[in-house]
Length: 135
Image (tube, rainbow, N blue to C red):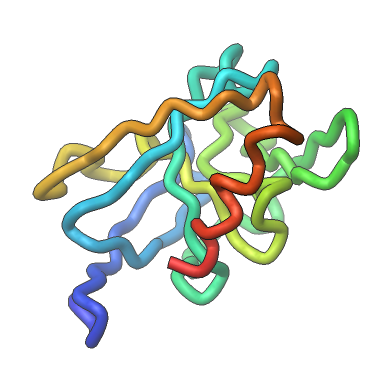
């Protein structure tokens, strides 16, 4: 399904299938490969979208949230399998950072550009991510 902005709704979810969502993404996307402490440990490359481009399908009641440091980022994960399919990023608290590998078909794009983000120095580099929720 495609809307007026050439977006297509793509489904995704956690490993066990308890959490399911869909997200509207264009055929060419940019994903963030962050080196902050949590992203580096879980190898979380993600695409940031505004809340208007994210829809729940099932499993909101299965989510558990973890926060640390400033407690602004809401790291949500499935309470059944432990997979973090998406989270609410510190840089865009009104949007979602969808884990690229948790899309049902992450290779089904015309182009995927990987941006390396220095999250270790988050305060210095956060302005680079601020535009993502407006895209």
